[in-house]
Image 1 (tube, one colour):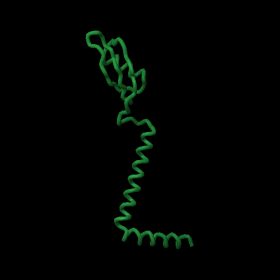
Image 2: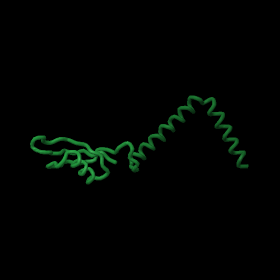
Image 3: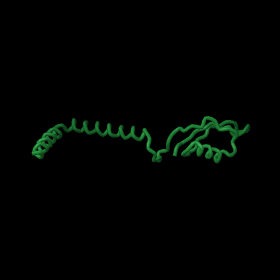
Image 4: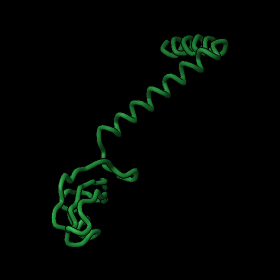
Length: 104
């Protein structure tokens, strides 16, 4: 479900206000505005301003965050290998010899 924002002219007493509603579609957002503010005179600049945290729809931001997570994990692994080089190098050499002997 997405968050929508609009400028709403309620009536001459209230004037124009900004409001936010949660809805899946543009039409759903309009219905939510009417449900929240009653019979408004005008809805201007209705636009989607963000997705809720619990939204399960896939988007490019999901893949961007997955890529960022992978990069952080890779950097952490490289950092640990640098810090514990005296353990990492012998393990890498041992793994290499085991791999080569396994093929034969």
